[in-house]
Image (tube, rainbow, N blue to C red; front, top):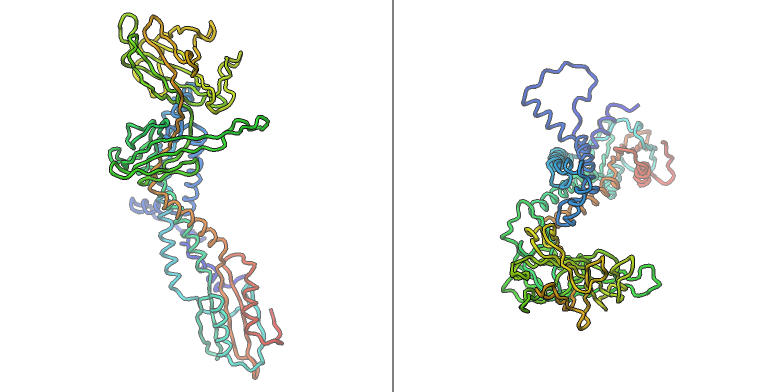
Length: 560
């Protein structure tokens, strides 16, 4: 059984605040007032136990964000709409409970904020306590070292004085990076006390401070950061303004009128695919490259850059990532008098099948009239086939032989009437419109027509001589994801701090080594070396034995 002195020594090896109310005596407690209740609540919130509970709750609260589609610039906005359409009973309930905006919901933010406060309130007292310990010298050596977990003693008859032994012990401990104090006893003996491993608690604090840093980084990103998506075709440009975004998510602290004023032009997009017919991944993409020109401001010189999927461009604190690509058929629409309504418009078509097959729409809201000269909306819906086999495949429809646009074709249908208010750039409401009967349809049950770039096959006439649609060519488009994250450096440093803190708290052992030298028989001294560790430490005995080996004469016997 350990003595009270040893128990006090072991307890003092930690700098964590002690739990209150750990005694066994039963006492009657007075009723708490409002101030005392607030103080009690603060102590509960800032305890490590509550911090762990909140961390567990935060991990549970993030699960819906992984299972359910979210409304954000990083996801397709139609995924939430489609999910709600398929789950008409539970969907509205989950939507009202903010399950489709989990990371911006009230309940997730509440847990996040409580965890942030809890960690800060827990760390600050421990940091102050640790700073006091760093300034405090090691304790004096206990009188009875035999009760220590690691203990060795022997009688030294080499004639070395007590002072020389103590000096040698002090030098040996300092060499092993112990903090050392030295004292004398009334019987003429003396002692040396050494302690090391202070960085263990520092590593623990660094870990928790870094965790706070990561939480703070996420909060800064959510408030001052923004994400956006931009789809542009070859030869086209965009400016970093809200009007040019196809989708975006702004934090509460972002002013849309003060975005970095840069612009970017897609000069050329290049994609390569697996050409081997026998390969299991035949037709799969091998490499994407976007050659762009950009200007950091209206007056800045133009620069060129090459973007790949894992090689973004950084402009004025905004990272521009290449995230997707596809084809943009180029069309021209003329009215019944041959006047151009739409002149060589590159319309992005998005993937809807294998081998680069994509679908898209185009809405003509002005300039088209029917046979009675009545203004009408004209809606074009089509499927783009990069490598058309020359005919529709029965049962499969429009298929492509390879993703490269070596023999492009446009399978087109048209609608006239009222397309309603513009519900989106890539969606079209045809509930109040009529499908147009185009000449030479694919089949009687399929009113679509196939346009290719062959002469005479690239134009289709609208009925009643109201106009024509021409398929002029094809260019490629690329989607760029814009990400402004002012917390990147903070999160990076905090992530490094977490690793360093874990290494320190798990790899460093807090331990003390004591050396006591006393007079023994004539011309001899009694030397004792002992050690104490805060927790289970398999290397403690080796540490103590190494100190003793440097003090013991070659032939001196050792008593454990």
